[in-house]
Amino acid sequence: MGKIILDGNVVAQEIRDGLKTRIEVLKNIGIIPCLATILVGDNPASETYVKMKGNACKRLGINSIRVHLPEETSTSELVETIIELNIDNSVHGILLQHPVPTHIDERAAFEAIDIRKDVDGVTSSGYGQTALGFGEYPSCTPAAIMKILEYYKILIDGKHAVVVGRSPILGKPVSALLLNANATVTTCHSKTSNLSEILKQADIVVAAVGKPEFIKGSWLKQGSIVLDAGYNKGNVGDVDYNSCYEVAGAITPVPGGVGPVTIATLMKHTVESAEKFYV
Image (cartoon, rainbow, N blue to C red; front, side, top):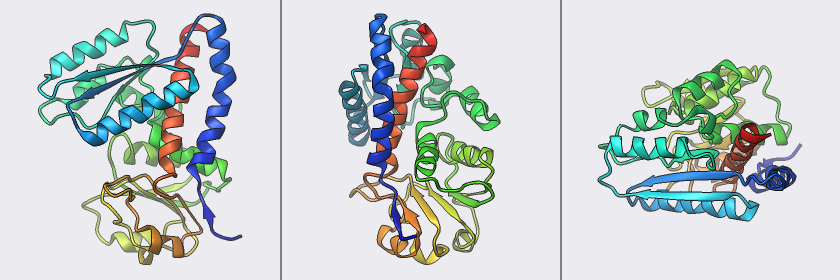
């Protein structure tokens, strides 16, 4: 088998195609799925991400509400905004764009989201349910990584997966999902010694470290599966694509890999939430 480019656009299209009929069924009973996105401050990258999510909603016929709060918004003001969306029956999913300004208690804000509307799996309850294997809405990027592996029929059972990164909405939940899929999982991070030696043992590599072109091809085992969840300035991921491409058996490009599937997964979770509220 030759090298596989894990094309996220193809996977995302399959997800969107599967949602069209479900959205029509909801509309026929007077329900339009609705995602509310909250952006605090004027981070240009975050603004771009929120715009992309809004455009994805529009293309599918999902309503989107964009709440843009000023940089100086307090934690209590943000929580109050989230609570208002929790009790709005027309809203089925709530997404707080990460990161928020440093003076805000991000965890307190995440915890304020009603778990029924936590379509990005950011609450501690949502994460806990995901880790235990019954979470309805895993964090969208980890869920996207699993969907790519499933779509391309890449065997997870019994494989050694190395996750580089331990954030609560990416590294930790994707480690849990891989473990639940019967991988043997090593989670690495900034304090890990001999990272390159650990990666040499990996059948599956998930790059979620937030450092541009950090992982080098010379660190990888020949034929390994590389999923790059990073997106950095200059349209580059967390792996050095050219050197990793030479070694990997399959690899996600950046852009066009994990990103499109993440957004499609967010749409899917929002539709599922609407179905649970009304169907």
